[in-house]
Length: 311
Ligand code: CP
Image (cartoon, rainbow, N blue to C red; front, side, top):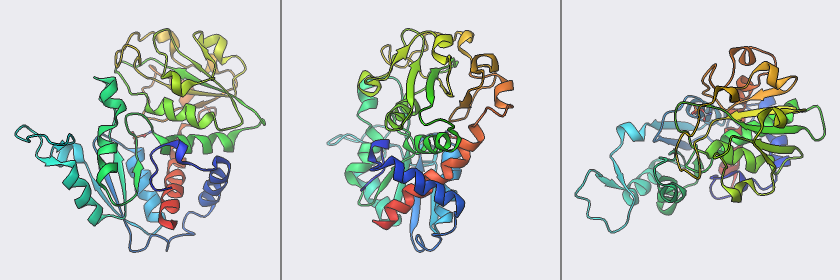
């Protein structure tokens, strides 16, 4: 594995989950592995969990960490080749990527979809811009299309809480006042398709995700029907993919409640808008796994960094 940009970079999910569980038991066991190595983290967007859990993971491996809010503090970057740079962009990614490669041994990058132009977002301009010019491994801290560290943590959480050989897992769209990207949903679908679970997706009409990612996974449009008999309900808001980046409805009927969950466990990547996406009572109940998911972000990141340090 040269870089970690997608859940598809995981060669054996079963092996990785078992190794992540072992790291969770003994987080400082490999504290000498990263000695003398530096992790750089470039954030083009906000973060709480990704930022802190990835730093914690690096510290557990003995690495030094440098973090930069690139979107706020860095020079505005140009990604297109051959541009006459007489506009707002002061630095080209060709220089930025090579410069950062000299300071760091591994580089994490967070750069969300802008949700204006689907083709532009799907070209992953920031992630691919750096990938084209770095000489060190890159870890995707959430790009336009994927959030693989989140999904690895989600898979670990589900693995720890499953009580059946083949649990029913439902990814449910939930309302949100702002247009949100598709990365978390995309990576969650991809990783669940590799696990022994019965996955289905439920959303209102007009919120279909990328067909190439959904593949054979069943899609429903009735939340009550979809949640029937569910063992895990993963709530996520996303904007329309067809009417790219638009909020078509904020229908409060889609908010997750204890009544809808019945006995199912509740999952969400956080941050979550209380009483819009999910009722307070769910988050305060024992059925909620959201804090454990956030905890598992450390071990997901630690496993990825360990793999990259070992190669
Ligand atoms: N789930 C997640 O990525 O959280 P942050 O945006 O706070 O990093």
